[in-house]
Length: 234
Image (tube, rainbow, N blue to C red; front, side):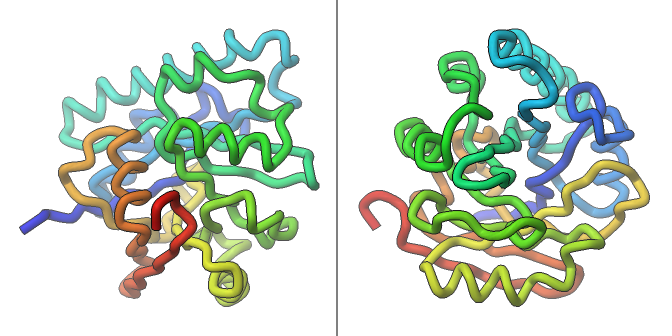
């Protein structure tokens, strides 16, 4: 039988995300202590971080930060997946989690924060990436036609919005994921997703989600499976 592991698919490290107080190593140590088996490093890609003409240099920082964390994670037996959180202004300001981003994708694509939601969605479809609107009710949900799902966020300001997230996802047939938006050790809320142990890379993680069309999330002792038919061929 397939073994399942618990991961937090929404964490930020201070080497790239200016709002984070934690190094990759500190994230890994603290998450292990909380009972996680892995995490997706979803550092910010935002307009106010760098000018568009410096995008390729910024991406190298993202990759270097991930690689340093991956080296440490491998030493201590922790899964460390590459991801990204992109902030867009079209159709309105919103944050987007990219699951399945590879170094090749990041180096080949244009300045991501300059895209519209539809343009980012089309790019994700082309590369087999899962596109999730992060904490959608901090602002408001975007166009459901151009996303794969929405996030149940376990940070303090979003715990009361789970029902709204589930209602929106159900209405539009979208996936629901769960993450903590981890920036500092004081954020010790316990939530995330189950993934097969055989998913060792971000690409394999996205391929699995797209293939089965469902995600099982955990939040403290609660476990819920969300299904969708938004992926190609489903």
